[in-house]
Amino acid sequence: MTARTSNDQARDIPEATVARLPVYLRALITLAEQGIETCSSEELASAAGVNSAKLRKDLSYLGSYGTRGVGYDVEYLRYQIAREIGVTQDWPVVIVGIGNLGHALANYSGFRSRGFRVVALLDADPDRHDEVVAGVDVRPFSELEAIVVEHGVAIGVIATPALAAQDVADRMVRAGVTSILNFAPTVLSVPDGVDVRKVDLSIELQILAYHVQRKAAASLVEADAVTEDSA
Amino acid sequence: MTARTSNDQARDIPEATVARLPVYLRALITLAEQGIETCSSEELASAAGVNSAKLRKDLSYLGSYGTRGVGYDVEYLRYQIAREIGVTQDWPVVIVGIGNLGHALANYSGFRSRGFRVVALLDADPDRHDEVVAGVDVRPFSELEAIVVEHGVAIGVIATPALAAQDVADRMVRAGVTSILNFAPTVLSVPDGVDVRKVDLSIELQILAYHVQRKAAASLVEADAVTEDSA
DNA sequence: CTCAGTTTGTTCTCCCGTTCACAAACTCCT
DNA sequence: AGGAGTTTGTGAACGGGAGAACAAACTGAG
Image 1 (cartoon, each protein chain N blue to C red):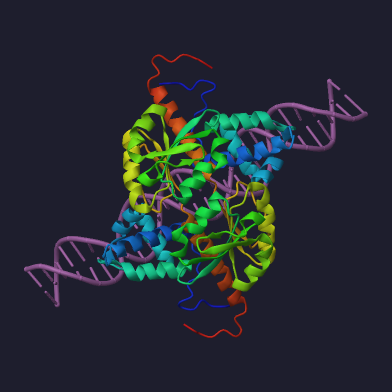
Image 2 (image 1 turned 60 degrees about the vertical axis):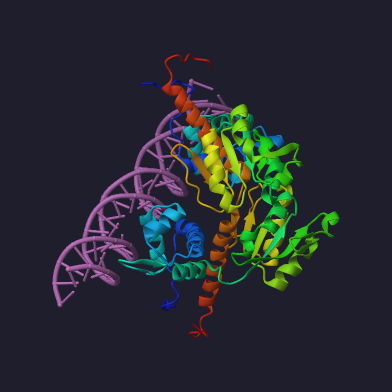
């Protein structure tokens, strides 16, 4: 059934590759800004901080966009990756929870420049409903459904405290949101078919702490001539 | 050389496991707050949002802290994981770049409650040097070295614009920081032995966008009776 | 004490991702 | 035109993590 047409290259791209495509995209934009028109896989890989073989294999899932003996055309590859990710079009986004983090997210220029448009900022606290953040005014949370339907929002961002997050997620899903970026330190449960990505600031720090501790322990072991059991 | 002593269980824990330990820790804290004293791997796994077999395997790298036929003692396991990660001690942290995101990070309660103490907020902009954020006053960036040495800071957080990030990282490393949490949308290059973890908000959104686009394409293919090539 | 029931810790298998290495393909110089 | 030099795209080997499945170890009832 449904044979793939030539420009329908929906051969499934591995998750690990998908996660790196935005990195390549950013590196290409930087190169383009520097006036560089062509680059080899080695140069691009170095700019993106990955192995060049990995880069080439990743790109090969999208198609053959390079020229052997030459390299990649920066503008062309940039467009192809952007198209594959889907950031050539405009994505309406709602942000729920306008605390410190919500403020930061609303003001983050990286969203707008990558095709994401914040169509609404929602908060349960009535005291905030007069504020205007980043040119968008804060609306009551109860308007979620209407806004999602009106703008065809598929992506929601949760920046509320942990306790409110599951409820917010439930209502987002009911309204029609299919992808959630969750900054609240909670495990969300959502129905099949809904994507959740989690960003947890304190978890990242804890992972770093583990490695610092390990490095410290390792250097103690190196100088273990004088160690004694102080358990 | 250097035989492992009994409580020196530094058999290397897989990275994937290390990344999940903070999740388990949070789940255990939640369970403890609910007054639950004992839990099975099934219950804890569900609270952490992972497979129970994976949870048991992860915990087995730390040691045998459960009781067969019974489960895990919540308080005991919580302490063991916290000790393994290293969050039973206090980690001094510096944050550089007090924009929107820096503000949010400085105020984030999840840091303090997990053993991370913000000892300094640094910014290059002299206009900000009078501010007090989250009880810590903003200092000029030039004081980085002195503060790192004075407090023995091993972990630095970069929340500056992309252009400043590499310079900040260089100076952090020179001052003695060995682990960096980078929020700037840039690939940092650091010497061996220095850990960098990157959190990129717009990349996370782009990954979501890719999946939304795929889901949309898939449902189009399902209803492809009427499709025509509109390339 | 014994036996049925429960739950952990671990082994084994499978799959995904990374990396190496090389053939194919292109450019440029002579 | 031909050959040397580059660089891509990919086949194949390798390593690590995920999940199933089971043996070991504990509880509690009779």
